[in-house]
Image: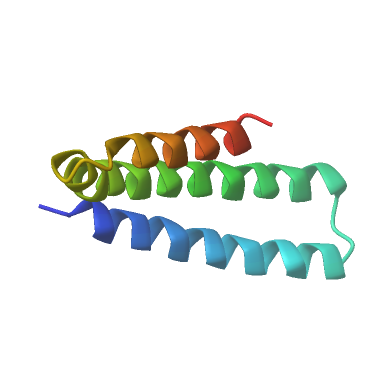
Length: 87
């Protein structure tokens, strides 16, 4: 079974490949809508990657923080990330 880390790494590598293709498309002055579609695909991959990373963080670091009495700090970190993500 594939771990979240492996999934996140694969998604990020796929996004990197697509980003390189976007750069080529821009350089070649390809159709703007095609470029935009590729950009949206990369954004989607990065969102999925971020969710996997956050899941790992919550299942390890945040759990540990609550066990050691630092849970409130972890909650504040997560809320800060959600704030950034929703802007």
